[in-house]
Image (tube, rainbow, N blue to C red; front, top):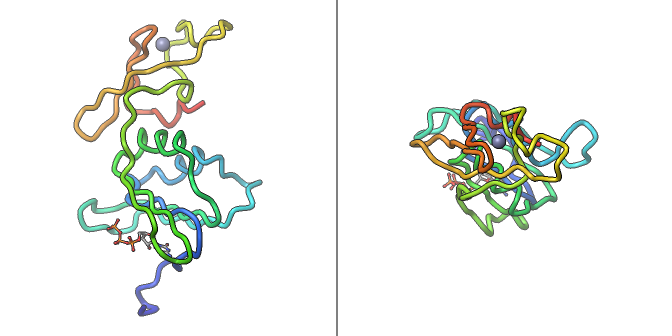
Length: 155
Ligand code: CTP
Ligand code: ZN
């Protein structure tokens, strides 16, 4: 590959989360629990020009594959992302994230009086509704609608 085109090196083993909605890469790291204490080698690209999307973010995590709950959560904040599993430099699996039909226990309801926000042992529960490309969550207990700032409500 021409070095003038090389932005970040290919990885040997791990996961590339590609086509992330521009601006959401840091929230993807949050979902993966990656922070200043993590030992994973992580590459982060933000606002990379990308044909159909104009700009995208990309996260590469070496030596790590994702669990289904992490993939579902990423689908809420970056519905167009692609997960690429890399083994020995090759993309061995590629899949688009699927918007889950419901979300249990991952997102905090925005209504402070909701039963899921009290000391009752009740996990939050949302039905996922879509509006075009956007994800809208409706609380199954109190009907509160969470649209814009889902990332800020991650538990
Ligand atoms: N990638 C990587 N390391 C590898 C292989 C691939 O970091 N060893 C990255 C590529 O840079 C790209 C993503 O994983 O960001 C997907 O790779 P690939 O399927 O080869 O790229 P495209 O065909 O461009 O993907 P798409 O069609 O999903 O846009
Ligand atoms: Zn609620």
